[in-house]
Image (cartoon, rainbow, N blue to C red; front, side):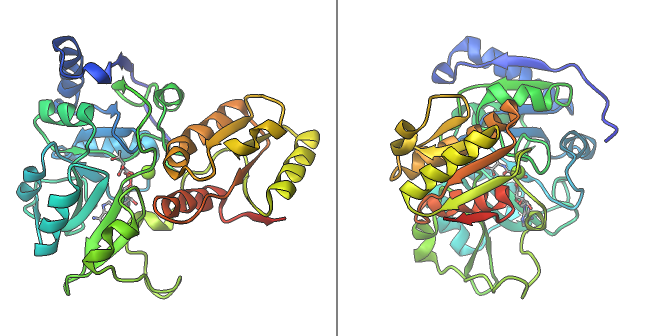
Length: 347
Ligand code: TXA
Ligand code: MG
């Protein structure tokens, strides 16, 4: 990739005091960078985003270059208020109901695009649009005065970022400003939905707004694999892959512990481990707590930080326990399966 190195300004924001004049001043500087066509990394409640003015074709182009993202994979447009969606998209009745219930929040709606202003949609006649719940994100977008196109702030194909500590290594020299806030509260990218002409709903990407939460709105089941083209352009690309091969372990606790201990004797491996199993291993950076077995919210929050930590440690292989597939667990399993390229070891 022929990416010109730029000077990156790192800004540390106290998200708990985001309304204070000092923090607003810092955000104003980042918003100004967006306004004039720059790239700004910012926190959201899902994952960190790499934002640019969605009305500026040149700025949007720079997002693709900075990430090494395929040019046919459209970006999500972020707006500060639910009402702003009406300026850029046409809403079917069902979308209005869903918006009222879930926005602002970790849900992206794919809608028919209105007008020709937006430059983030790869010439599609639809736009994926979202209103983050995170106050820092909403303030930044509002201060910039423009809709903000923002994919996840990671190099294309790599794990998303939820912990600002790991972002600088990836994106220093590729963004004008990095706004470092807290670790993302949810930790997985937003749920993406589209609407069929008959009013039914398609879940294009699972997330914290779960299948169960959307079940009252008539979800159309996806056709079996291979029987229809991907509904979301991003689905055909590899995703979330750490440097080392990742294997998901399926089997009894006892067998998992024995297996990982054996691997650790032979190689420098990382283990993403339910908290209940931590006591079986010697403490070390490479044994990363995933959260308690039954705490899916904690596991969602910890997943990408763990994958980025394994990358930073330079382990040779990564092993991960398998979360339950209910609620947000469906989204955690989806990310883990993609990160592993489907490699499951049954013990
Ligand atoms: O939580 C999130 O959604 C984060 C934060 C930063 O907001 N953003 C994010 O963006 O995950 P990205 O670019 O990593 O994922 C966007 C997904 C891709 O799979 C893309 O193909 C899909 O949304 N998408 C974007 N526009 C679309 C459209 N018009 N129709 C269908 N899918 C679309
Ligand atoms: Mg992404």
